[in-house]
Amino acid sequence: MAVYNFLKEETFGLRKQVTFSGNKCEMYIPAYFIDKSNPNPIAEELGDRVKSIGLFWFRVDGRDWYELQFPLKFQFQYSEKSKASIRIKPEMPQEDYIVYTLHNNDAFVYDKLHKKDLDDLKLDFIGKILENAKMPKTIKYNDSFNIFINAMSASETNSLGISSVSIELLLSEMYRNKKNLHEPFRLAYNGKNDYDYRLVRIVKLPGLNSTFTSIIGEDINNQLVSSILRKREGIADRPSPIEEIIKS
Image (cartoon, rainbow, N blue to C red; front, side, top):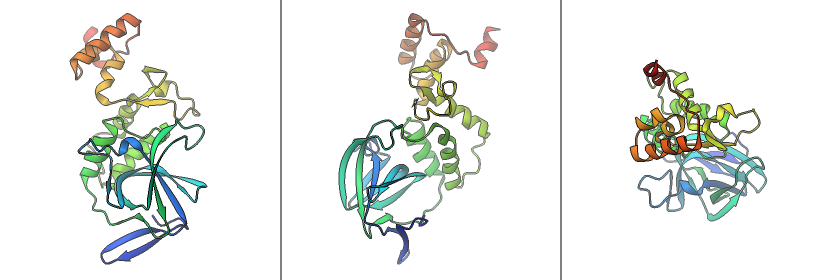
């Protein structure tokens, strides 16, 4: 972790800490990460520390931006707290953030010793981030697969019993064209519009593809409404392979 000149590694007993050695470091945590009404939030405040999944941007000394693509939970220490609604880069969407400011000698990583556990992947990354479509909108479309693989590697999960193609297929369906949610974003992606997507929850996918998948999907009431609206608006179905077999 201590690969930047503003970070240094220190040892405190059995705890190995990565310490910020610059003047000011601002951690931009998406505001929805800190949901005090959620018993299992993506991030939470613990006194003068924050425990969060490492998928966010940070800025050092008010100048240089850095992106964390570390899909595990870790803790950092902070000295100040504020709010901001900004575009980190011009091409990114505007987001609401809680900004935690670190000063010299605050812990950038409070304890870098982390027991690798399947729950990091299953409960935190897949359960809280992916299934609920909570991946930060500041992550490029092309980076989503690598983040999934990083989460597997960090938790020493070499295989989920499925091929990488299945993971790519899942992600390609969850990422939708924000101008037309009935269309997967891969069909609208041109290599430059990295943030013109909307990530949707897995349970919403059936209603976006066809009437058949809607009525066999979860949450039948919403799926029926989706099917009726599809018919009224004249939206063409994207038949699934099993649907084509049944119809043939």
